[in-house]
Structure formats: structure tokens, C-alpha cells
Amino acid sequence: MANKVTFKGNEIILKGDVLKVGDIAPNFIAVKSDVSEFDFYSFAKDKKCIIASYPSVDTPVCATEAKKLNQSVNENNVPIVAISADLPFALGRFCAQESIDSLEVVSDHKKLDFGNKYGVIFDELRVLSRAIFGVNADGTIGYIEIVSEVTNEPDYSKIIQWINS
Image (cartoon, rainbow, N blue to C red; front, top):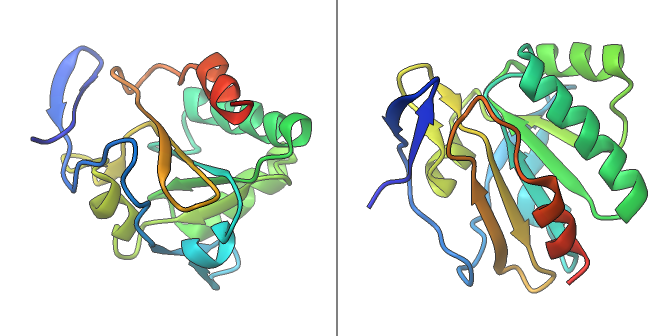
């Protein structure tokens, strides 16, 4: 069964695989803002981390989320991959403009590899839906939040609770 969310109140069925807590976090390949390859398994090897997907850094909610997650990395010392289908160049511009320096910001634009494997493709707009995946040091998924209304922010308190568990 596919993940479902709403976008401005309208139901959207997301494309891609549906994951659950306890599943092995799938590897994915994305593109960094300098257009080099990003391999999730290389990044996450033997450490607890977070993957945060969002529609676009060029929207106010996404920009706010990126800033809050950037601050969270500095406060909680848990690495975060922030991923969208934005072009790598747009991600680089945004990070420079907003002083986002603690997140690993990557683009899924090229192949939507992450979106397919994590079930968060908002196909109508070819963007990723807003979601948080907590990955344990053993590579299993320990936390999932598919934000039910795409225009809302995730529940940061639950993310912090998972980090500290």
C-alpha cells in the first residue's frame, strides 16, 4: 500500500516503495551540490543518522526546515542528509545564502533513486514529499515520519526524542 499525504488539503498518493520501522535502510545514490556523487551507505556507515526529504528549498517551509535541521546537527551531533529533487546548483546557492553548513545537502533530481526506494515521490510535481527517516547505526530504520500535510513542518520534538533514544 502506497504512502498517502495531502498537499494543500488535496490527497496525493506517493510513488515508490513503502518502508517501515525495522527495515534495512536502502542505499541510494544522489548528487551533491558540487555535482559529485553521494552514496548513502558510505555516509551512514556504522552511525545513527537522519534523512530529511522535502519538496524544494525555494519554498518557505522547506527553508525553515533546513535551518532548524542545520541547528539540530550542531546541538545533537547526529549527521543529517537533506534531500530534494532540486537541481544541485540550486541547493548550493541556497546553502551558501542561508549559511547551511552542517547538513549533507543532496539532489535526487537525476534518477529519483531515493524517492523510489523510500516511497516519497510526489509524482504530479516531480518532487519529493516531506518526510524524516531515522537510521540506526546498524542500518535499520528506527524512525519514520511521512508528514501528512506536505505544507507543514515535521515534528521536531519526536525527531529529537528518537535521536536521544
